[in-house]
Image 1 (tube, rainbow, N blue to C red):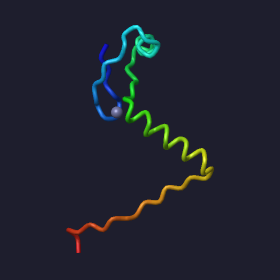
Image 2: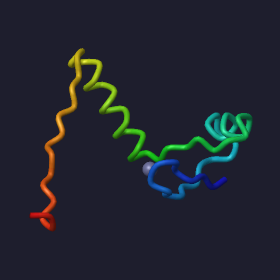
Image 3: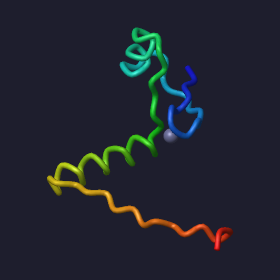
Image 4: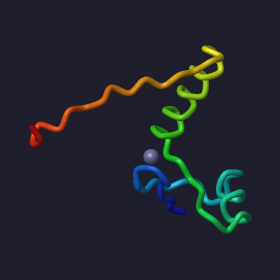
Length: 67
Ligand SMILES: [Zn+2]
């Protein structure tokens, strides 16, 4: 069966008789993340857990078109 990644819209085919496919069908919603996104989210979660207090620092970008 073919599944579409929720984040990057990449279509992958997974084994229709696999546990993952059964889960997806039973939920009736295709909450699927491709391998890449899955790993990316996994990494983020790991980092967040490891650092305890996680603060995101965003640098403010100056708009070059406004002087
Ligand atoms: Zn993806």
